[in-house]
Every structure is written in structure tokens, then in C-alpha cells.
Image (cartoon, rainbow over all chains, first blue to last red; front, side, top):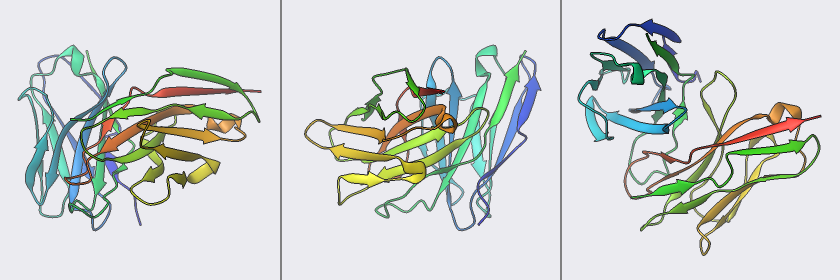
Length: 115
Length: 114
């Protein structure tokens, strides 16, 4: 089975721009979660999508948003980029059904640099 | 709410020596426990997980971890490390009654030298 894929792997943007990152989950997985990884804050949960609906959300400003398509692929968008948004953005997929001893599998990440 | 504490930010060790990476968690409910490894410029790879059953869990690459409910710990061990084990290791928890959102510790950098 193919793993979780993320595109692009690297991005350089300037302050004020917006960016869209893409994630394709493992086949059969319906849940996609996004995490931000920075040296200072570590790994922080952004949001989770299941069956095209946001099911859970972390403590991030509204500039961070996402969506999920009917094929379970997900995108996350960051508008009005700030220098502090520079990070590795990780996507994880899982089956997504409560009570199923669910496990998240991660993609390689997208490295976003904001100048 | 849950929280995870990884007590060591960095652990230097010589090749072929044993290693233990410590993880403690706090939660008002029972949790699932995970260890992930991150090699440079890569995503997270699942090493092992404790969901229920035997408290000693074996994972990939010769790693194992023991769940200790009374001490709320889930320490990772390997009897003999290799240079290739140099990486960052993350302990994480998720609530079993809900969905799989992970709460991570800050990570422990394992530095293996010859």
C-alpha cells in the first residue's frame, strides 16, 4: 500500500501571501489530520477532517483552514502568512472510526519557509 | 486533556550500548500510547504502540516499551543501539474513547556515536 503523500515538499513564500498544501492519505483511510512542527513549539495539532467534515480543531488562528474532498484527499490553506508560520507541516491519515484502536500514519511533510 | 513529558531533550550514547528514552503522561482518562521516530528531513514513522493487553510492547528496529499505569510512564528501550538509530523520538498519547488526535511530547534527540 502506498503511504501518505504530501505536496509540495518544500515551499518558500513571503509575508502576506497565502499557501495551499496537499495531502493524499493511505487508501481506505478516511481521516486526515494536520500538525505543525516548529523547533520552539514542537508538534501541535491543527485540525482533523473525516468524511469531508472538520471533526476536531486545535488552537490556531482562523488564518489556518482546511478541507477534505470526497476521495479523502485534504488541503490546508494558510492566508496572510507570517514569519512565525515557517514550519514543517505534517499530514497523518488513519481509518478514523472511534473505538477501532486507530493509529495515525504520517507523510514526509511540507517544509514552509516564510521570508 | 492530556499532556506528555519527555524528560530528556538529548541522550548521547555509544554504539552497541543500551538506551532508555523516558516518557511520562498525564490524563484524566485512559489513553493509547505511541512512540514515533523522525529521521532528518523526514516525517514521523511509527515505532510501536500500546493500545491494550500486555504492557510490554515490541516495535520495529529492536525497540520495545513498557506501559506502567501506576507511574503513568511509557519508556522506550533498546538493548544495543546502532549509528543509524540517531534520530528524534517522540512519545504521544491519544484518547481511546474518541478519535485519534495525538498529543506529543517535545521529543528526545538520540545521538549515537562510534
